[in-house]
Amino acid sequence: MNKLVLATALLGFAFNANATSVIFDDFNVDHGPLSLGKYDSQQTKDAAVQDGNILGGERDIRLHIVTSSGVSSDALAEAGANPMASQLSWSNASGAVSWVEMVYDGTTNAHDTKGPYSTTEGLTNNIDKDGLGATDISTFTDFFFNVTSNDGANNFDYYFSLYDTMGGMAMFTGSNMGSVGQVLLGFENFAGVDFTKISAMSWGFIGDGDAIDIRIDSWGIVPEPSIMAIFGTGLLMFGAMGYRRKEKDGAA
Image (cartoon, rainbow, N blue to C red; front, side, top):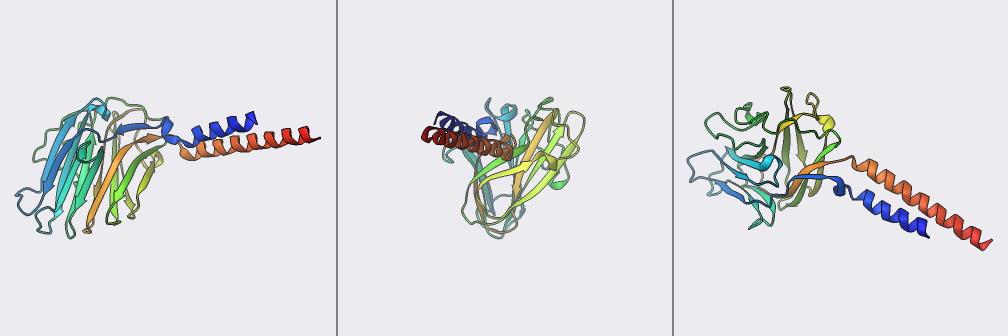
């Protein structure tokens, strides 16, 4: 019986992949709101906040309208404990196309006419590509972000851009088909960067003209979840076999 109890306890620990994850931002620090609509003369708004619990001690957010639908609020982005309940929120009116980008480079970037932070429009002028120093995340295997709600259940694209101290850069774009829950993005999608020397990261979301209203409660890195699950299943089977053998021996 003791073997089964021990194996079950270990299984519970093994399945809890988040026990060994690293959260880069839980969006508990207020940011924004950033809002763009027909009454705004500009197409881009940005802001920065600083906090020791955020990767690099600082977060930049930029909201950009690609296509306006002409309503009072085409796009909105904000984060924080109040009123967003420690989440990042991004919404996009039907007919409008916008993107929101978060940058983690340890630097409050100079927001000027050079353009967006990263490669969403082919420009990287506003990222300090050495800002995080040489951060080693090579013992992990996946990025994650948690989609807690998607009110319209509509599709949206997401992207991650990584930089290292050797001048390497890699970007990956994926699609979310209206689902909620944890999204995993494996490191193998970022060929060309040294994961022992990561120096800046940016990521964000891009709409496609549908109404969007999503919330994210955290993002970071995790070890390989499948390895932990397989290991835990093996422990449970081993414990159950031992318990059965002991019962048979006692009956004999």
